Structures are given as structure tokens and as C-alpha cells.
Image 1 (cartoon, rainbow, N blue to C red):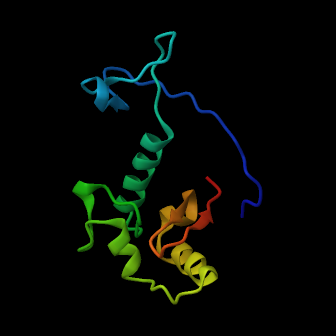
Image 2 (tube, rainbow, N blue to C red; image 1 turned 135 degrees about the vertical axis):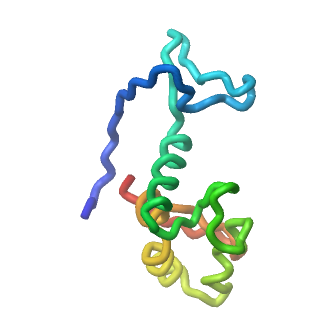
Length: 122
């Protein structure tokens, strides 16, 4: 079990592909000032979540074209499991048990007129 935050950097080589297109620039590849390609943390998490889902794990933040339940919003998915009477500690514990991406990346739940942060090791 990871008990402390660990920062890391990864180098990925991609040829003839667009690993993380920028929707504000016609989906052109994202680049830094030197012309090197960039992948956002959001893009990497999406790829990992999709793979988790492919492996059969329940995922809280599902892509719109990969929804596996009847809930088209995160709030409805959350409310299916929790109410305003559910204690924060129980929400954190159960959300970690239910959804692998919450357990991995953490999540901020803001659906009960308060904010509940769940920290993940990744």
C-alpha cells in the first residue's frame, strides 16, 4: 500500500498518432514551446480508466461513449449509492470499495452541498 505521495515523470514515444489532441486547436497534437508533444494528466487517466473498464472493474468517471450503467452524469451515479445522510467517512470508504478509479486517482464529490475529498495514491 502506498502511504506517501510520489511524483514521477514518464517519457512516451508515439509515432504517426495523436496521443492527446487539443480540441481548441482543431484536435492538433498538444506541444510545448520547443515543439515536443505533451499528454495531459487527464488524458493519461482517461486511458488508464478505459483499460480498467476493459478489465471489468467498475469506474466512477466513465467516458460518454463507454457508460456501463444507466447514469449519464456523475451526480446520478454518486446519488445511486449515497444520500445526504451518509457520513463522509462512509462515503470515502464505500466509494473506494465500489470504484477502482476513485481508489486509484482520488475524487472530489460535491453533490451533497458540501465537498468530500478522497485522496488516491496515483
